[in-house]
Amino acid sequence: MPVAPSQALRIEPLGSHHNRSVFSCGVESLDRYFRTQANQDVKRRANAVFVLIDPREPAEVLGYYSLCATALAQGSVPLDARKHIPRYPLVSATLVGRLAIAEHQQGQGLGALLLADAVIRAYASASSVGSSMLIVDAISEQAVAFYEANGFVRLPDSLRLVLPMRVIAKLLE
Image 1 (cartoon, rainbow, N blue to C red):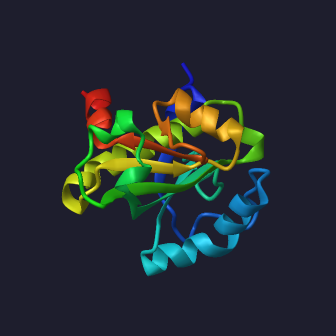
Image 2: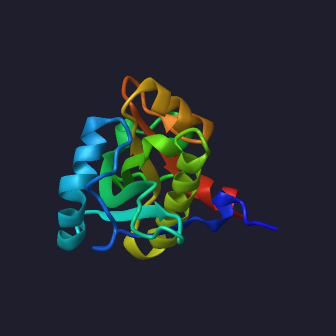
Image 3: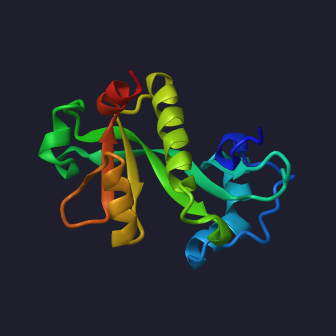
């Protein structure tokens, strides 16, 4: 019996063998970042970049996301999420800086697959790096809806959403 495509896919750190030059998700800023900046960010350790690939075509990137450390002002956190974080002026967090799926792969649930991987990686590193939440900066209202459907809470008057690590811990139990 053939393996379903989603079961055969793999998420791995961006490497020199991945073909960045042809990636297109339909959002110019995300495409440009991946084609021109992602490799430099990895080398400088400014961002960790992870790619979704089919092992049968290991150079073709089906999607990607980036993670980095950041901080958020305590007052910016919604009240319902604030109970899950320390009461410091700046709250340590992990940022999903970018998440994109190749245009020809969109609509297959691959974004949720990448987001789940980002959540797991962020949670796994939180105890050693010190991160009390995961943050995303959505690029549109459609993206906001995607993140909200995946448990994130929107900050007031912005496209920024948060997911506290304590909530992630409960999801992973």
